[in-house]
Image (cartoon, helix red, strand yellow):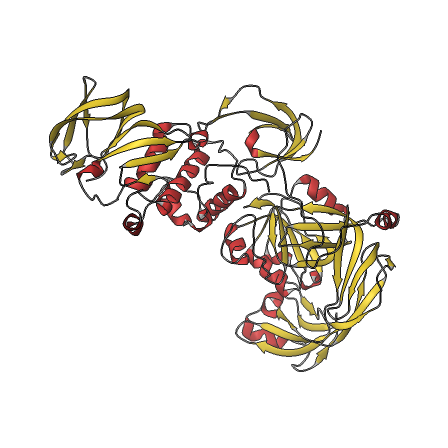
Length: 222
Length: 368
């Protein structure tokens, strides 16, 4: 078997991730036997590309679960807090690290970032205010900062975040996932909450990293 | 290619050949007495009766001797069903009947079993203590994707078409000592039935990952480093799920129906010995590197090569998997797939149609 590279090369425990958990990431999952066969064929032929939309959705579900399983564990942070201790999430520097080569297999930067958020940030316990803001970095020989992720905390389902980015106004509601273009290296944002806060404040103006992704705001966490 | 194969006695016995001796396929190279072991027959299933009623249909008493092909159990036909006849699959003693499962255990009678060479070749090594003979011979080799089980040999038997599903009902005791060629998928029940029937090996297009995980010690890591054996060897030619055996492989295997073949499940290899008597000349004129214990010949790793029009290629992965055809086109620009990926496509002409596949999803079988 030739050693050809693929999306899942970074994980050496792919055969041990739960097929039931992969199915949870899919709206209409195939039966578990078919899903496991799909997964193992990916291990066997890592270089193959998904052709259909449904195959791509399965690939992304596998990636979400693989990232979740291989994401940082609480004890990892204690042992190696200076470096962050994980190839995909640097907790100390609040960075999401996406290998550049992943874009060969998932070309849409928004989609791959969303996958990383689902796997690594969603349902993760916040340790302080700064968990609300993450920088997205594409890692390669030279790293590239492509944008930021904001995780607003809404107190109620009726909450609203009023956001101004580059003199444009946006309204962010709970449960939404919004991408706002911000191609500059640094972007100034101003926000005001009704029933919510971010970075510990209901109203503030801050400067964050921009780039080709821009600003991704995940309103799903309460 | 010239390679080495093992032939081994299944019990204690004698080897009749010596190093350097030339062999023909029918030549008896040793004999052994097989005395231990038993076989289980599910008479309830074979007679289609409830387990507790099986004893009514036994025509021999427990503890009696019975010889191969003698009548063991019989059920008369009725208005809506035919008669059922079960004969002894081997010489043995009727040992125990389980009324809860309807299974009959037969202990083997000690019997003499002769071992034929099976191939044209030259004896390279004789190990009388282990009852082993190592033979240099000419073979065609098929590399499957992966497999499980130690080296085994037997008579090749096709079970059906290359796209058939292999279920328990396809396996019976007459298939003992055979290497079976299945279709696109073999189910766990059929593998269990094959072990009960003393089948030597199974060649299949696909297998469910869950079943293979059970055979491979729980983990599915490729290439595999651990050797496993569950009592039957399996070579999977295409991948996981229902994938017909490739037309090229099936065509070659069809030509070997009823002939002696060997396989190594753990290495995913099938060895098809040459049955042309002239092959002995090539065997004589070819020297192999010195033999090392456990290493029959050099393992061939697959490699990367540049695609050329006219090559025979196979589709791998999860779409159109197992399709084989001639490479008739390579796009010069990238195409946006429905999955959102931009990539170069190859056009493949299979026997039935032309398909466009990402270049990353094909592997080369042979050159232009």
